Length: 383
Image (tube, rainbow, N blue to C red; front, top):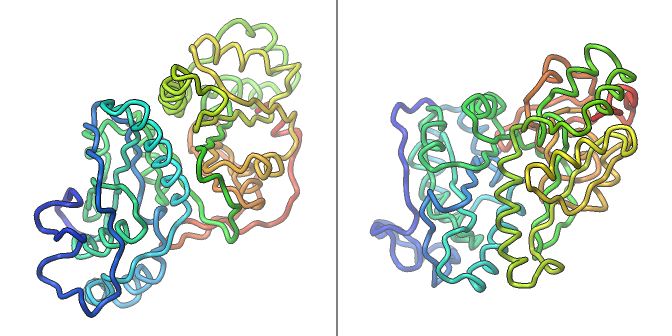
């Protein structure tokens, strides 16, 4: 969209009636949209764990984008106005956002006055006319999203900094790279043809290690000197913590929320569970990864050292709401097995890819076209 001025809106303001509709439109002739009757107070951005989500990954907007691309802005706006009571269907980030809300509900029961909660901010570069349809969709799906920014095609980075964003998910790889360059944890989310059912009561987040939680230091050793030198390097430096990667901060805030449940005696029933899913070998290079997490004071609930084996089958068993990896090879494997996979474009691995995955750009998010199950075990063994 080529609008010049970004616009930030708050859902539920004075321009809406109690059922979430606009006073200037007669809703009696349309299907009623569901709006929660009681909305808890939104936390202040400085206290919350802020998750910025693109509208294109939260909802499916493929048809509307096709109209914009093929018929132009005026027809796009006309269509949105004519269909603004028709909610968008869920996108790949939808289950993740619902899981965040489930965690919030339990936190509010245990800590009624605390603002250490997830706060989802919807980010879109759409025209402001889409705002009503987005609000109606949020209400229809009973999502608790009170803040969103319509940037009119401008960069969202400034808004995300103002909201103290802890994680940004988008279908736009260029915006993700921009966010990472500005120190904001970010990943490109992909849409696949099939998705596995995930837990409605426990948030499950899976991370790769190198160039995601950790820096790409070890990756660079492997690229420059090969696998044997990589193993030697990891053994010699196993007591030296790795530097942090782009998503270390997100794991850290997840850990802080987990501890709030632990303090109430709910370690075994915690609604947040984290996973390290790495192609590193446990005996030859796993020690340094675990000691690094310990040095940071961070816990990981489950650690899977796969020694180069495919990650997809393990992720199918875990069924995470979201999985982060810096290599498209592993994003492809996860997506093939029905996992919502996100690419973190960080580190030396971005200089080239051995993956057979092809990315098809669509309006509801980039889609992976899987070329086959083959893999280069040697090139992935250390990660």
